[in-house]
Amino acid sequence: VDEVPEAQSVAPDNDQGTMVETSEPPSNGDENSEKPDQSERDDVDSAAASGEAEAQEELVTAINIGSAKAYTAADGTVFDADTTGIGRFYAKGGAIAETDDDRLYQTEAWDPGGLSYGFDVEDGQYKVTLHFAEIWKGAQYDNGRVFDVALEGSTIYEDLDLYEVAGARTAYVLESIVEVQDGELNIDLVDGIQNPKLSALEIHRIEELQVDALVDAGE
Image 1 (spheres, rainbow, N blue to C red):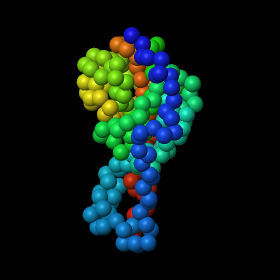
Image 2: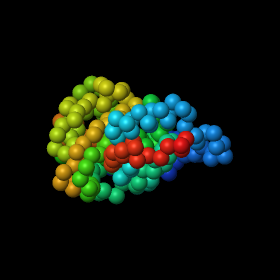
Image 3: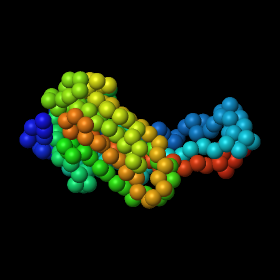
Image 4: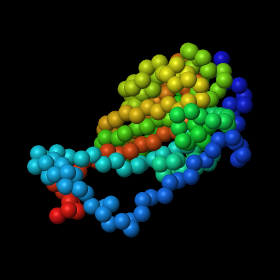
């Protein structure tokens, strides 16, 4: 059974969700707050001596899936408006549990044939973060909506049932590390029961930096 026609609507400007303001970055006025303590310096020295590397994440893209509007999350991440042209849009205002970013989860894209996204990226490792919430009443019961999640052709979650794992109108986040070797990062939500759906996504490139190349402010 497909979702009702209203599932193609876009969130109104005055929806019931609460936009969370971006928090201010910490002040640079306190010089002491910027200096690592002795234990932190010792950790850096120890890691450098052992040749360890630290991972650094760089945001590649973040998309407010199913919405024609950008959104700034509570942690400062800017989710761009959805211009992918993929799926049908659905919006439903109201509170979302387990998140400070209600509005991010009040819109979604869905499609009975599944959702497939492809992003041109450099080869390497990436962290993919997918945001979901079951906001459609027609699937707010066990086995009401079930689908697979795959990255780069490999299933990372089989038979995902959002209502079973999180409940109705509750944020649920999936994160996974993936290796890209063909210049394109692929995300597929594969049809099972009802229609696969997605509220938002983030892609971060993971780079490793040698610890001995980092500057120790204490020296």
